[in-house]
Length: 339
Image 1 (cartoon, rainbow, N blue to C red):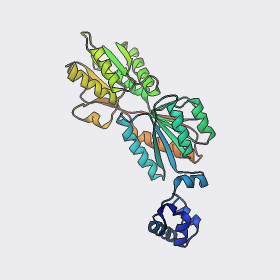
Image 2 (cartoon, rainbow, N blue to C red):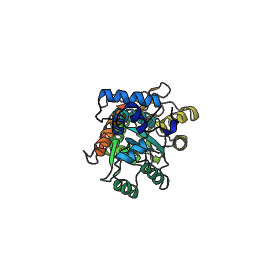
Image 3 (cartoon, rainbow, N blue to C red):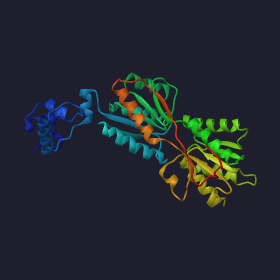
Image 4 (tube, one colour):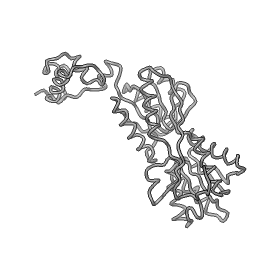
């Protein structure tokens, strides 16, 4: 038996009695190879303990069948759910993902993207991460398509798949006003992101159309600690608001806990709370959160199609917004008539 680290596709070909190209085709998803040849190659590979090296193969074929994924944080439960769905969907298409965490900063993201280019990935997905013009140009020059997931950006070279954040914010505003609320605040998502800005814009525009001005709009930065402090500041006074729209569920859970267990307020009797995302624990009895549901399955499907279409040269970059419904639960007062 050969030393495990020395085994190559040529060794497998020799034992199987086939050509090296037949071994390569056997381990290339979608490549043509007869059932008998595949069986012989797989048996020889199992005997020798051989596994193909995707990086080496990428240097020969120019295709690694690896998708680089850059994500800023995983605290928000929406992202682990989305990443699992994305990974499974890509695996079904013969691709795998390589995950890198990067702070949403001018220094961290370029470093990660440069490393992904070194890995010869076929495409890059960014989740909750912005792309600078310089980075986009680098990827474009290298022929690496980029799809932004749950983040939009006005650049014709990039694809972007998001929920319809403006419509979601608008639906929350209409729901709260229909429920009789007038002293409404918005603890917004990070205003450096398109998602945070768009949800806030849809919300405030819809309030204005109904003749209501928000008591306050503050940036929660998608951070639970920041959201807690805003909650203390906004609701720890006599003239407290009667409703709050929170920019995502991750912050909304912190807001709910602070309202009930620190400030002693009843939800929804004293204050209504609405979030955004509809992550799994939003439906738990402990939170029972009314929220906008991000259509994560449809967003993942659209992201995969955009990726494969760009890799195969079948499609141009696309910007897609997918509407999600308002899921009414028990954390907000229910209007007698709404819809």
